[in-house]
Amino acid sequence: MVPTRTHIAAAILLIAAPVLAADGPVEIGSRRELFVDTYLIERLGGSAELRLHRPRPRDVVFVTDRPWEGNTSAYFTIFRDGPLYRMVYRGSHVDAKTRKATHREVSCYAESRDGIHWTRPELGLVEFAGSRKNNIVWDGIGTHDFVPFKDLSPNCPAEARYKALGRGHPKARRGLYAFRSPDAIHWTLLADGPIITRGAFDSQNLAFWDAVRGEYRAYFRDFRAGRRDIRTATSKDFLHWSDPVWLDYPGAPREHLYTNQIAPYARAPHVLLGFPARYLPRRGSMVEGLLMSSRDGRTFHRWPEALIRPGPGSGKWQNRSNYIWWGLIETPSLLPGAPPELCLYVSEGYYRGASTAIRRYTIRLDGFVSVHAPGRGGELVTRPIRFAGKTLSLNVATSAAGGVRVEIQDAAGQAVKGFALSNCPELYGDGVDLPVRWAGGGDVSALAGKTVRLRFALRDADLYSLRFR
Image 1 (cartoon, rainbow, N blue to C red):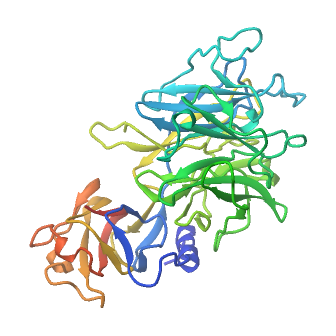
Image 2: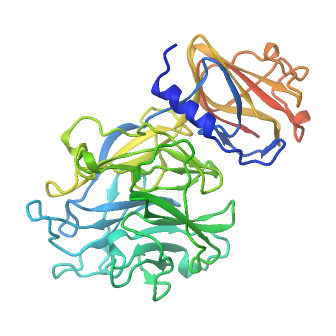
């Protein structure tokens, strides 16, 4: 079989994957485990491989056509907040001939009930061109790349439930400034000076509360050996930060990375997913989104192929179009009765014309990477694990003729009585939580807390994630 780029990417990941767990079994408990990396994989057999899946383009959901917005509106941040989806972004415009700004940069706000249909509330907070009838929420320092988030720390006071980072003036007040808000609309500075000063910061610098590790994490841009790259720092109070360190990407090529778009994955928050923009200065300053993942916040597995290619149409093949913006949310599927889909927002058009557009892209839950086997079949054997729960469920998609069988092995790699492949009726279908059963039923609680391995036999199937419940 001639190796494809996907095979090569999987090989790179397998060779480069660091062992992030201590010696001994991986304690997965009842958390969801993704196959977005090789963390749980001991070996792949037959024709099984890790396969990258690409989100599909949907409708344009937002166009920056207001007088205070324009063709360089950027750095969109989208997050769900109870019944609302919130969006904050930069409003800015550049004259196509002179490449000079036609108005000052401002930070704007929009909201939605479904993540698809967006409205601009008339907030009356900031005057623009003699009127306060607009959706501008911030007009001070940091508007170039004002990036908010909802602070989920249990110790966060109500008046600072929403926080943000924004870059100060690159010469006079260099660094990242901290902001707070009680409602994501009314903002004030948390400190007079910058809280992080080592970096270039001309990007979508971001931060969030990492509930798994009990700390704030910030990711921001700097230059490393002449290339744009990403640094990270941590904090317990959002004001005092550790010395920034570079991210590591074992096995990945050296490339310009403009944005980073890193956040905990909501369905498995111990995994951080990032969607950095690969910047191509020798190809007209084009960008395209990549996929990377981490389990420690610093070492990332980065796929060499583009997650989202520019695609047809001139609006995606130009300077700084095709950014993936920060915010991976769930939106309803277009298929009746289907589960929700993951949604990413991607830019179209930049510098040219009167505005930019934001297109929605969707992919199945947990669906960025799968263990894939074609019709001739393949196998996956996990590293030793210990789980908590009573049943095993899979996020899996098969053809009508394909399927998946699961064997539970003991620490020595021998099939546990009653849980061999021969005891497992082939599971087929398409669902995000399909239960696995054996001849004696689906109850695996007798094995909870013991060291086991899982062996999967797949035919014309994609396995995205697993979870014991």
